[in-house]
Length: 174
Image (tube, rainbow, N blue to C red; front, side, top):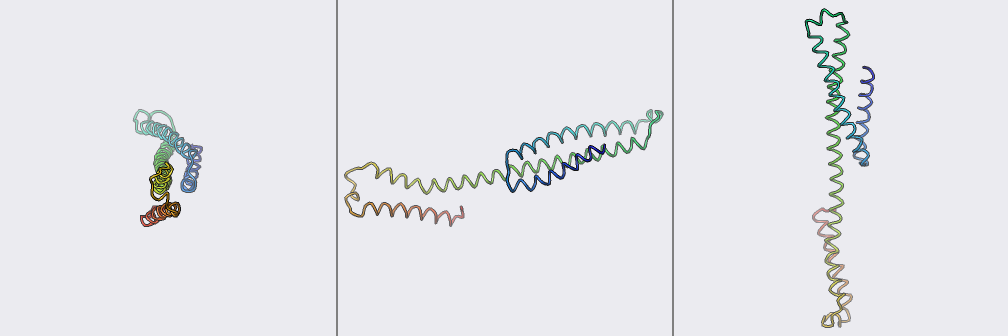
């Protein structure tokens, strides 16, 4: 019985450590560990509840009073399994919260990456269009004959980048 309690207390310490690790560096290994704990806690809860129910029936049965057994010892065992069962439920709730927190942190990081990629795409897409048009080398583009045409297009491209970054800064996208 004390072995179960020691395991549960060690698990509590590990769950506290995981709670800190989620915000520092969330990895797939951490999620796999949490999922394993969730499964093991669910099995432990079923086992503890089964023992608790069995002992409760034994302690409450009038016919069992004729059987020689240490009533205090069974009562102690019943209380221990009851505590272990409630502790397993508590830890299972904590593990579920940690899994949800892990998923939230991962989703937030993914959203930040996607926002950055979208911003880069939004700024460089017009530049790609401009480069594609001027890469066609048509003869009847008046600015091609103009001596400052090349610099004007470069200035236009720089202006597009600056305006895109300025717009993103106003919208607080980065």
